[in-house]
Length: 318
View (tube, rainbow, N blue to C red):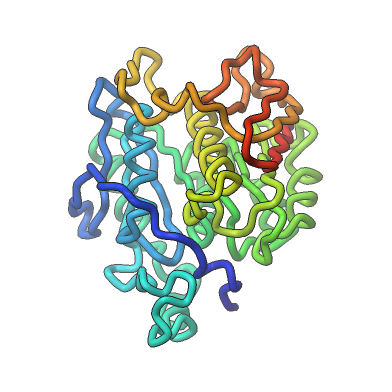
């Protein structure tokens, strides 16, 4: 197995992470905790791409989830040996990605993730969500197979065996699944998206299934996109907002959580997401909660267009 060209491409995002580095069950983790009241029996695991916990992009994403009411833990499951940050877009010609991947074959990091989950359960976490990007999406599927998580989100997942893993998800998992897909993705191409819809859609996966497809985007857009590009920025933010909505709809946040006035997400409500939204509502979302951009109110959900981009988002439900 090998990584695709886009697996190590992208842009480092600017910002100052506000979480803390903590040791959980012997594994270093980046931990982002909501400032307001939150459901302490609930948590979200953010499972990273090959650049690991150390990449600021993942830490900033965890902070954003925390600002929306989710305590978020990012395990360093590469144990300090993630792909070097400078390898993004070929910035470190001395870094041998193939050798790195040989040191970290699929599944070799599962024990670290399991240790973190076991500790969280010991500390009283009874409902656990997981969001996985690229390689992290593979781990989300594996955790869902074993019913180790309760809610699942993946963005441009890697190393998913199609159709076998999708059929396995249907038969073994109980975690509602949201997939963020895109046009240019050797790891999870449009044909895989179509298979996912055919196997999990149409009410066949009863816990809940939806897929948000971002046209004009490539593998990695949800975590390493170029935020100076309006289209890439809209897609990255759209995927994040969809994930927030999915976790909230799946009861991963306490109903009385009050988003701080200056919250990152709330502060962007005046700037509409640059996307055209086509919604096909799922059975899971028919009672007033829809997968939509958080910069739009629910009654504006059916379509929304912003100036400066042609990014298109299609939402496919059960």
